[in-house]
Image 1 (cartoon, rainbow, N blue to C red):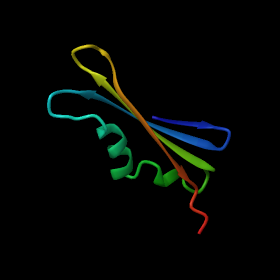
Image 2: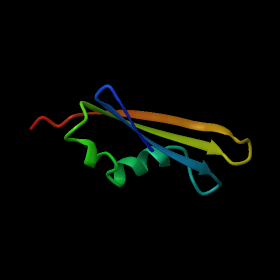
Image 3: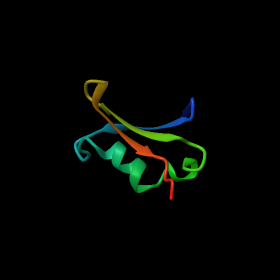
Image 4: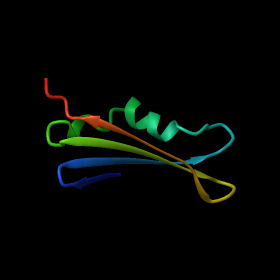
Length: 73
């Protein structure tokens, strides 16, 4: 999911954790699959947000974020 706000682009990835997945996979997927690449020209700043839910508790288990500045090269 992508959200545009005042020159910033927020890219969210949501995951349901089970026994096989450890926290941090949602944020890692955003970076590994290059979800932010198509917004690099128009965004002043990219904010990647990985949100992971516990299947058993039905609540947020992990919330990680990372900023990536626009490439000015």
